[in-house]
Image (tube, rainbow, N blue to C red):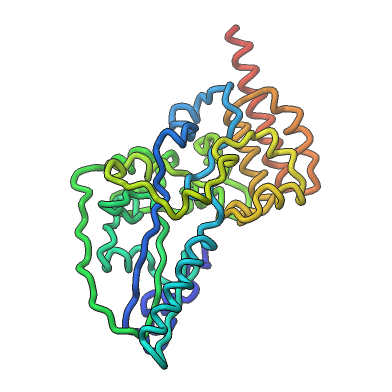
Length: 319
């Protein structure tokens, strides 16, 4: 995770990003939708120990079930930035970012009054809940600051209790190396064997700590992302995903955040999920994956095969 140390000075000083900057405009775009539209939950902590064999569908984090938010939100920011530069006149400069710049997004959003940092270390908005994309515009315009938002977690610790891998090590403390979102998206190498069972059927990210937050009860449905939804990513068939070649992977996930994992990363995750689900009908597909030209995929497929076979043996022993 050395990449987090890059541009450290810029992260704490926006003037290092845009010389002459006087303000940072922080924005949040909701991707909240009616709960009925998200019918397939990730496996619970108990189910990762004894997964239900009838569900060979994967779990994709809610934010990734849309056209890539960088593009959708970015189009709006380009328009707003142009307006601000015209408003300020000659010499006005503005730069926008959507989870892409060397900025402490959550800290800036809290200071701007968009919300407060929850015990899970994510931003919580009283109006939008947890389900938000954050964006910023650094500008040379002088803007009146808003008041920072106060923490409103109270005694609630649901997010800490919900974390499948215990990555939230304490209030406002996250060990990202244990976080399923990191393991399934950012990690480029093999997933540590001891953490694989807790991943359940999650193949891209994890929403558990966000989903249990009681502030979601007050969240308003997001309109910006709604028209960009990808229903085919709500409950993808794991066995079908395992058959994707490079071209098929790019066709299926073109324009979505899932491209970030590349084929090797996604199929690694799919193998782990199938091993946890324990569906024996996945064995032929896993055996083919165990011969994949990418050794990285093959190793995770062999792990899944071994896990399924051990479960079958244990079940037959009981019978």
